Image 1 (cartoon, helix red, strand yellow):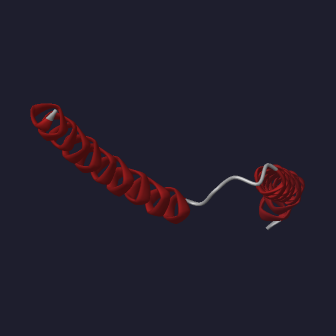
Image 2 (cartoon, helix red, strand yellow):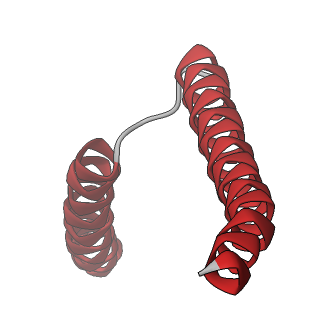
Length: 90
């Protein structure tokens, strides 16, 4: 029975040390997660301050520009056709 008591006494400090390391690792992970969250928040704030357009706004403007370019090409072709017709009449 004395040997069991000695074994229990030896394992108690080892258990305490193991728990200490486990808690320390958990604390370090928690701090790391907090730093990541703060960094992400700061990055999002910096992007918001840049006043960038959203993807949806970009796509809408892209479609508008494509439509205007197509309309411009059509008007240019019509104008060239009318100019040719006007030259024939002169």
